[in-house]
Amino acid sequence: MLAIYKKELRAYFTSMIGYVFIALFLAIIGIHFYMYNLLNRVANFEYTVAQVSFIFVLLVPLLTMRLMAEENKQKTDQLLFTSPVTAKDIIMGKYFAVFTILCIVIAVISSYPLIMTLYGDVPFATSYASLIGFVLLGGAYIAMGLYLSSLTDSQVVAAVITFIVFFATLFMEGIARSLSTNSRTAFIFFIVLIAAICLILWTMMRNLPVCIGTGIIGAGILTAIYLLKPTMLDGSIVRVFNWLSVTVRFNNFYMGIFDLADIIYYLSITFVFLFLSIQVIKKKRWS
Image (spheres, rainbow, N blue to C red):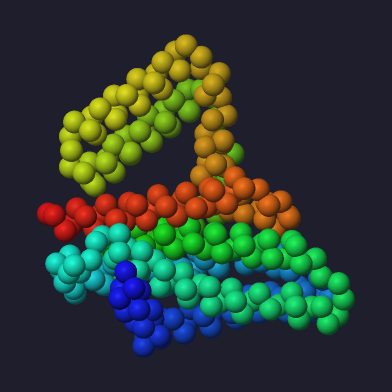
């Protein structure tokens, strides 16, 4: 894993991608920091962090688009598959390389609350809690981008798909509220969701019995709930979308609410997409 990590990290700094990412990241945050905190003399750095959380949607695809798509296009992935490293080592090495670049940026902006102490008292607890949430949010986005990059051999396609998915996460809560909350709509929505899960399982495993079994069990449980106690489905779409939204849970951090459930959520999202990326590598290795 260490060899993959060093190789990927070196690749970002022997090209312009790493420097462009860091420069744009710091420029966007710096402008918000100056306009909101310094110019208006507001000590709450967490508000600035909350305002620039959209930055991951714009910049993370720039980093993750090449992680696996470039390997797939240049066929250098065959060298990785035949090398004495596991699929887990490949994915984790690439993930931590990108995460290190994010940590470099976070290390720089962590000094901003200290700068504001020159002009008055700063609420360090909420300021640095928001930065912890910022790191967790970024780690989850990087894992998602890595998985999406592993599905294609085109960096452009990987970047566009990643951007669309990330963009959707920003408005997931609003989209959910615009949908009907009755049990019938929820039933149709979850049937479609189960079908999508079965399709993903088929793409990853090519195991028809597992896919059909998952679909039958899921549809059976959902149908039983709909027929016996349909009120359980009322408003469930909104609850699911809110639970899936990576930005909704970030709100707790910048408001000073340090909830262990939010930390576990972000770590779980990161783990799930890293796991899916590992499964993609394993499938390609043995196909």
